Length: 234
Image (cartoon, rainbow, N blue to C red; front, side, top):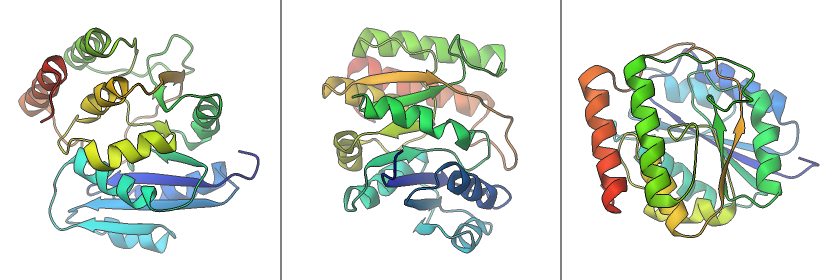
């Protein structure tokens, strides 16, 4: 990053077992000036206290409002501060902080939103998901390509590098539900922002529980994809 400053937004819900180590890994991977903000999405455990003890700024939502709401609050925080690059990663330890420079390099080359892809042909890991989830991800990719004109191998990735125009757009317009990062991609594409992917590694979840599974996950996929398809917001 050549001494440039970075702001990192980490949405977290009941991630007390992993958020501290994620913060430490980000600091090791990003030795330059780095602001880390953890958005505690109504956790019932010690996520906020653990993040603060690890040196992050902590924003707390009073109840669990969902991934999109946590991201939007983090982006509002970021939009009011000075930085050269912005980044988002999960608090569960799945994203490799050592891949951050590769995503930031793509932003430095002119992209507005860079996704770290688990399923890119050049990804160094072979991340496995269930057949049902993989089919849903492929459908999501087709819908995003149809509505946004962009081809992505991992449209549900939560591993992002962003330009300031993208952060400012998402700070006011990103929808607030689970999987609404899909709607964020559509929103960015309609705004004329440049979206791309880079291959990354992905580990197994290091702690906590997925936000949604089974029928609930299928419902969220269908809701988000319908909203993307019709071009609206949830």
